[in-house]
Length: 235
Image (cartoon, rainbow, N blue to C red):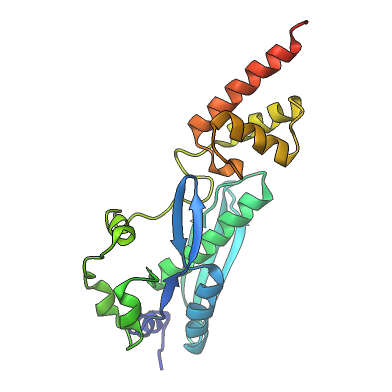
C-alpha cells in the first residue's frame, strides 16, 4: 500500500488508465480530438480513489485579481499533497468561462498525474488491451498510415491546443463585442439573421462567431460599418 502521494503516482504511472481521444471539437478553425472530462473522471479519478487519493479543483480569484483553478491531489492517509494553479482567462461570457474551466479541470488532472490520452486509431489502444505500462507509453509509436493519420503525424507531438479564447488567430473579445453591436444596429441582432449576414459577407456557411478569425471579423465589421453609413445617407 502506497504511503505517500509520490508513491501513489509511482503506482499509477506504472500501470496507467487508458484514455482515448474519442470526442471531436474545434478551436478557431482547427479541428481537434480529445478525451472529455467525463472519461477522465471515470478512468483517472476512480483509480486515484482506489489508491486513497482525493482530487479537488476550485475556481478561485487570487489576491492579485487573477482567476485560476487551484487544484490539489491529496493522499488521505498521509496527508501528503501535490498542489498547483491553472490560469484562467476571465470573460464576461459565462459559456466561455465554463468551457475554459472544464478544459482546465481536465488538463490539470492529466498534467499532475502524468496521464496521456491517445487517438482512438493509435496502435497504443490495441496494446492497452493487453496491459500498457509507463515504459510502453514512452516508446515511439510506429509510423501511422493513411491520409488522416499521416496529417496527424506531421503535427508537433508536444503541441497542445490553446485554451478557449486563446487562439492567437481567432476573433478577439473587442471584435466580438463590436461585431454584435453593429449587427444590432443593422437590425440583424437575432442569431439566425446575424449569422446569415456574416455567411453572405464571407461567402461560406458560418454557424458560430467563435469560428471567425481576426481577419474574418475585420472583414465583416468593415462591411457592416459601410452598410450602416449607406443607411444613414439621405435618399
